[in-house]
Amino acid sequence: MTETRTAAKKVLIKTYGCQMNAYDSDRMADMLAAEGYQPTEELGEADLVLLNTCHIREKAAEKVYSELGRIRLAKDEAAAAGRVMTVGVAGCVAQAEGAEIARRAPVVDLVVGPQSYQNLPALLRKTAAGERAIETEFAIGEKFERLEKAGRRSAKAVSAFLTVQEGCDKFCTFCVVPYTRGAEVSRPVSRILAEAEALAASGVREMTLLGQNVNAWHGEGADGREWGLGELLFRLAEIPGLDRLRYTTSHPRDMDDALIAAHRDLPELMPYLHLPVQSGSDRILKAMNRRHKAADYLALVERIRAARPDIALSGDFIVGFPGETDADFEATMRLIEAVGYAAAFSFKYSPRPGTPAAEHDDQVPEKVKTERLAALQALVAQQQDAFNRSKIGATMDVLFEKAGRHPGQLAGKSPWLQAVQVDAPEAMIGTIQRVVIEKPGANSLYGRLVSSSSSATQPLVEAAH
Ligand code: SAM
Ligand code: SF4
Image (tube, rainbow, N blue to C red; front, side, top):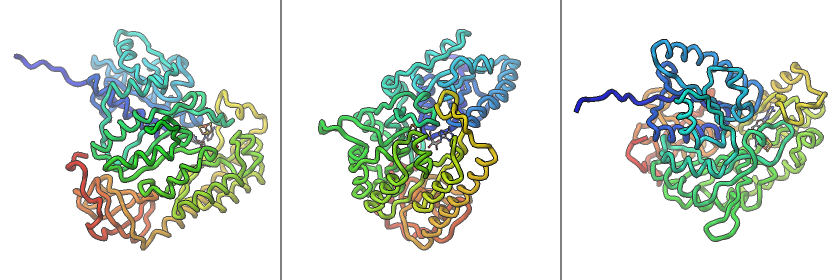
């Protein structure tokens, strides 16, 4: 038999925005692998380029169009060499703008919203037939079920994401998520357990449950009762090999007693919680439709800390929401001082088309937003530095994930999500070791192995990851 040249097709997926997009990109890659596509990082050799986009702020959305300009040149070069390069836009920009993207950027052959990824193979057949394919339907139950069937979940790393919930019904007045991701939907327990077990079996030691409102997750448990995220975490902790559990992003209104109890009683649940508050001013919180006051948030933090005293908190903040005065901003700074964050994400308010806040006529000038953001970030940086320094001299479990910055070093994570660099042999990747923290660096802590006597030192799979 003569050998025929059937070079595999190559796909380049570029991901913007949140961890849920990172998860979706991996699932699309798994699905496309079943269709014969191998991943590539090289634009020049890609047969299919997919931009998995973010619409949360204007800057994020605009990045997509500048990237499409670059891709147009590569597509022209491919065409000159007799190759076809298919260009797709996925994610929240695709959902929000639909066919408009292809009008604004004719290089685009395919537009697919976040709830339609299961239809990618059919959409690609359409583009192969020379048609433009646009799909922005909401059919979320179907999405996960069909993605599961299309591509087996395989872990490529020691730490993995697992989406358990999608969408949002909260309608904060600044936010596009309820429009781009649709209504809140929880995946069923059995499907989550099956995916978690597959991940653990392929070497995953740490799993982060994802959802736009992950703590709004609920479903019928194995015992027939209605479970919330707390009960789900207890069940996931029973899976052999899953030593660490995390979840993100939570809404303060959905932190129920069972979830707080999980922080108290479940050693596998890491002592780190991302709990966005957005503002410390009750007036602004009301205008944002957050449906809680600053004092409610502080009381909640107190309850969580009573349950798990060493918990580290992070948050999201928006500065310059319409109508935000100096006094409102000061209230945010006071809340940050009162909480003491280990990390935080902060943003200038960005008016998003179609959201109520974008219509307000009391928009805050850009210069004021810039000043407030700088002041807030300086305060958070101080708190983060203090938190990191508080761990110097401490002995802690570190999960080694990959090779470190320098030869002979491994990079790992502390229970508090800090990056830790340690001199350690490669065979320790995928293991948890006791490490003493010696000094802080710019973005990581530096530590030293204490001994190799941890109970969880054996990798679950031979250096396959
Ligand atoms: N569901 C989460 C919550 O309730 O906080 C957050 C999800 S959102 C993808 C991530 C963060 O983006 C928000 O917490 C908020 O701080 C920020 N964000 C959302 N819309 C924004 C806007 N229009 N301008 C600036 N920041 C925004
Ligand atoms: Fe957006 Fe989060 Fe508010 Fe939902 S709860 S609208 S995702 S900020």
